[in-house]
Length: 279
View (spheres, rainbow, N blue to C red):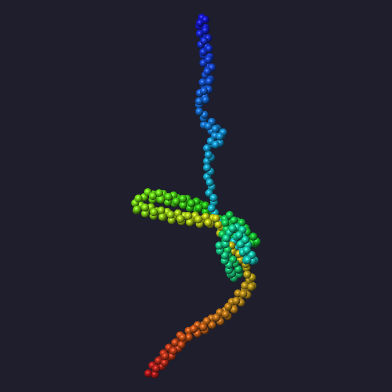
């Protein structure tokens, strides 16, 4: 009986010891498991250098706008107004490309065509408008050519890529007929590229510089205009009649040889006719 008792106690001690080692084995198995994705993401938060680069933001295309303006107004002094325009031209880095002046029945006028950098467009018009009571014509327009600019740019890139491909094919060509055909295609593409580049430069020049037409005039007094008009007409009529008569006399004098020949020729014809009548 004692032996059976000791055997039971021995088995109970062994079973208790085996249970005490089970938590350590489970702890080792947990450490060997790989961390999930969330745990890996937290490591990027701890170290910003390991974080992936942010997505690129699409760059917005700058608007291409052609600005133009036409101004017409009356002034008391043409010279002072012209000096004011010249000052506005100098202050806004503009340039006068055309300057004309004239006179009609009731006014004396001056026309200017000015090229102004687009960024100074509004300031230039403000400088010119100082002292003007009202405008007979004030027309300001803005044309958006962004779509046209993008279209030309994309077409130009496409043509240049096509030219590069043909140049690569030309390097590999062996037959003379193939070389001539490829060179002909390259020449046609080059002409299209130059045409597109010309259109693009013209568009860029119109966008970068605005065109402003300025016309200012001074009214002539109506009474003074009537006196000058009728008096000058009468005097001009008298002078014109005198000049016409003198021109006629001079023309006759310059034609005296022909007059003498005509007289001599008429004399002989008349004499011959008289002889025939007598016969």
